[in-house]
Image (cartoon, rainbow, N blue to C red; front, side):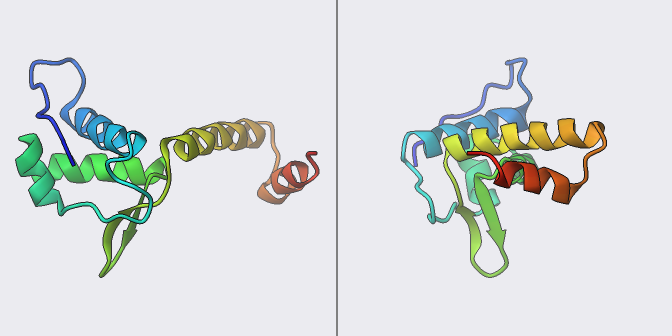
Length: 115
């Protein structure tokens, strides 16, 4: 994996820069689905940031659907940038539907009925 250092002078938060670097590596195929990421300490050294900054970015990428945390197996790439984009849109749809009063099963039923 070819990571660059983060820019401490940039307006973007360090954890967002770290997440962007990992996201880029996934999008460009440097890290593929099923591959294990190095430990947060090692990533922090490569990127020039504290391991807690890396951990925060990893949690963000997990929430996007790009990473999977499994005890004993480490952190693995579980998806693609495209999958993360779809999950983001699905999340927006679910939030929108819930704000209108729809329950989980009602949303699932509507989706299942789509052509």
